[in-house]
Amino acid sequence: MLLHTLRLFCIAGSLHAISIPPGTGPYHVGYTQHVFNHTTYDDPTPAAVNGTGTFIVATIYYPTLQLPNTTSPYLDPINIDLFSASFDYPPDSLSHLTTTLQFQAPTLFNTSTSPTLIFSPGGGVPCVAYTAILSDLASHGYAVVAIDHPGEVPYLPTPYTDSGTYGWGYTYSFTAADIVEIYAYRVADIYALVSFLPSLAALYAAPFNLTHFGVFGHSVGGAAAAAILAAQESNASTTTPPLFRAGLNLDGGYDFPANSTYPSLGLRHGGPFVQLGGDEHGFNGTADPTWAPFGAAQTGWWRWLVVHGAQHLDFSDIPLWIDLLDLRNKTTTPQLGGIGGLRVMEITRVFVRALFGLVRGETEVVFEGRGPFPEVEFVEGGDGD
Ligand SMILES: *[C@@H]1O[C@H](CO)[C@@H](O)[C@H](O)[C@H]1NC(C)=O
Ligand SMILES: *[C@@H]1O[C@H](CO)[C@@H](O)[C@H](O)[C@H]1NC(C)=O
Ligand SMILES: *[C@@H]1O[C@H](CO)[C@@H](O)[C@H](O)[C@H]1NC(C)=O
Ligand SMILES: *[C@@H]1O[C@H](CO)[C@@H](O)[C@H](O)[C@H]1NC(C)=O
Ligand SMILES: *[C@@H]1O[C@H](CO)[C@@H](O)[C@H](O)[C@H]1NC(C)=O
Ligand SMILES: *[C@@H]1O[C@H](CO)[C@@H](O)[C@H](O)[C@H]1NC(C)=O
Ligand SMILES: *[C@@H]1O[C@H](CO)[C@@H](O)[C@H](O)[C@H]1NC(C)=O
Ligand SMILES: *[C@@H]1O[C@H](CO)[C@@H](O)[C@H](O)[C@H]1NC(C)=O
Ligand SMILES: *[C@@H]1O[C@H](CO)[C@@H](O)[C@H](O)[C@H]1NC(C)=O
Image 1 (cartoon, rainbow, N blue to C red):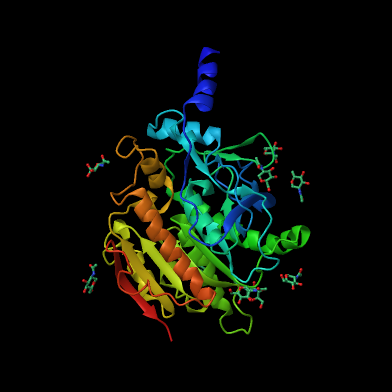
Image 2 (tube, protein in one colour):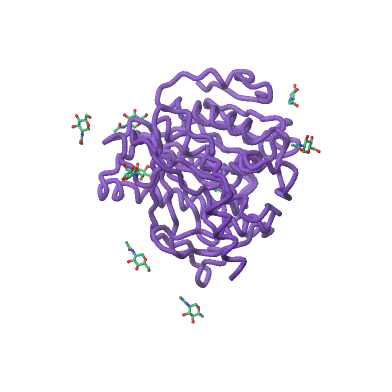
């Protein structure tokens, strides 16, 4: 009881809030969530009942003109405790982090002239850990839909309830079999989400663009994005316009499927594709042997860029948490390079925006050479025909 009282006192009295950097675009950002019933067979996660998953959770970020007048916590209290205990963060340090995102603020448009963007996170990482990247896109006019798969992440709050779903822990070691199944259901979750959006748009008069999509992700989610575009190749000779017009892979290897032909599939009918990775994916694929064969198969517009000083988790908000809280080198968070949270956020935001801007007809020059960033190296690419 004493501890409980002390903790409440600390939250009310002495902690100061640190807001993550707001989006760089002209709009403020609203968000909402939906639970979709969706069956996943061969679901390896602890949340599956007899190996069958039953739902997915979508978090939607979108532009709004409404001015934020308050902040909200970045992470829920259970994830704060689980993450802090896993990687030696001072208890409650993560509760300092806030955002200015506005729950269910009015939407800006009645129809969106920007493509709808679908995001799939890294394995075991909740989508909330990408808020800085996703909300930046919304501030530039995009609706972004991020998909969480219950049971894969340590805790997924169920929207509009006080409960949630526990899953694998933050330090769980995924088996090779888990990863193949995760990859397969990520691809299936993206298709399921896209099939649910028209009825959601109709029900809530939500202004999703239902003809133009972009897809991106981190790690296994980035590989899933490539798989979505690769699947469109089979339709290349039909007159059906492709649903997905661009894709981006943040630091994901292409060895997830038990399917050795996949890394060699070209994506030319899926529109532009970018792979943006850290040092492990940077040296002509010698560190990751899947990136070079994937690149060699591309005949459309594509770019392979490496961010020197970045490691795998630098393509999430996690290094930003660390630097905003002054915890650099003071936790046991794995897979971080020396680039720094604010810097890698800025770089990732610029390249992700530039890629999807191509679908809106924007001309982007950052893909040539290093763009404005000395840490970024152009490895390979092509302009297509
Ligand atoms: C989703 O599943 C839950 C639990 O099985 C059920 O109660 C609910 O009616 C379902 N919703 C829809 C829209 O089918
Ligand atoms: C799970 O499988 C067991 C054993 O086959 C069965 O008794 C149980 O009803 C199943 N549960 C559900 C929710 O299907
Ligand atoms: C903040 O803005 C919302 C939406 O306009 C409004 O409902 C709420 O009353 C405002 N709160 C304060 C403290 O001004
Ligand atoms: C959308 O907004 C525009 C102008 O803001 C208006 O002309 C148009 O009728 C609206 N469309 C719908 C479906 O409400
Ligand atoms: C959907 O997005 C594309 C690309 O930005 C745009 O050309 C199209 O007009 C948008 N659709 C609507 C209904 O605004
Ligand atoms: C291929 O086109 C058909 C209709 O022409 C469509 O139903 C199907 O979803 C498309 N497949 C992919 C992977 O885009
Ligand atoms: C795996 O290979 C098969 C046949 O070679 C192909 O049809 C399928 O699309 C591939 N799967 C992925 C995810 O690319
Ligand atoms: C990649 O390989 C090419 C030739 O195979 C070589 O010229 C280039 O320097 C290599 N780039 C890196 C970053 O190692
Ligand atoms: C963190 O550790 C690295 C590697 O030892 C070091 O280069 C860096 O200066 C340290 N940063 C801080 C803020 O302590």
